[in-house]
Amino acid sequence: MLIRLGTYSIKFKTFFAEDLGLGKEYKDIKVEFLQKVFHIWYVPIFPAEKHYRIKSKVTNDLIKETSASLRTAINLKLLKLKTPFWSYTGSFVVALPILLVFGWFLYNAGTELKRDFNKKQRTSARISDKEVLVANPAIGDVYTFKILEVEAVTNANGHVANYKANPYFAPETMDYELNFIKGDSLGFLRTPNQKFLMYGNKVLTEFSLAKNQTELAIKGYQDYKILAKPNIAGAKTKLLVGIFEIKKEPVN
Image (cartoon, rainbow, N blue to C red; front, side, top):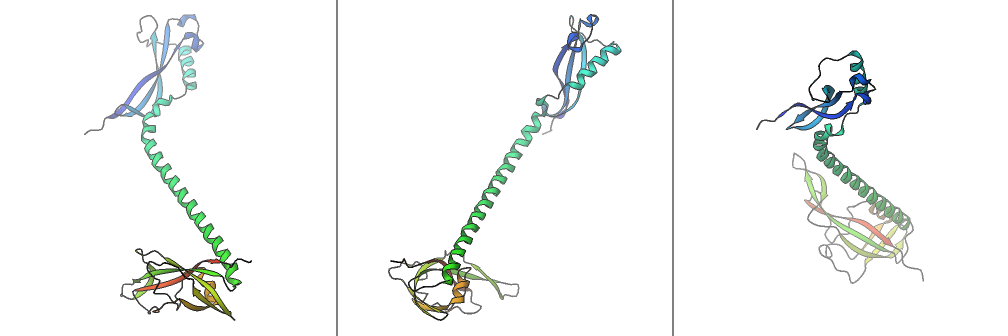
């Protein structure tokens, strides 16, 4: 299908002698101002130049013979005329969906940035709280551990290069009570009446960690020996542990 495009002119203003500041000798004329536009399928895309035609008020015939004073008055009026807004109609029509899509992307990007910022703020606040609590352990504190399953990422040689979270299994939480403190060693005992989906029987019910290990675990998942069957180096899957939350024993 051929695209029909080109130019055409539309009359947008008509002035008479008195509007142009002309004398009575021009009382029988009128001046029509036209806007030339580029179009696609006759929809104006953007304006070109303005021009005019002089006609008789009586017969509506074109007047071709003009005087210098008449042309000067018309040109002065032409300079003051604004381009009619409708000459941009097609541009608005074309630009509108683009602007809407762009606005939608901006809105979503802004929402995502705000969500990420709020998430980082919450994470930062939670880590700050945990840093205070983990630095001052007390018997009876309840530590919520998170168990995360990760799977191996191999390089071109087939060797394990890294690990990433298994997308099919969500981290599972387990509560442990701090039941002894001896120097830098902290002992943990799983609190009773907990239900587990995946890893309940894979993590020891009682274990100990060094204080500096708990300080690392509040910031990210670690490979600690708290599993019933410890992780094997280079294994395809591993279980990692992190400390999600610390609750102090209420003071009576």
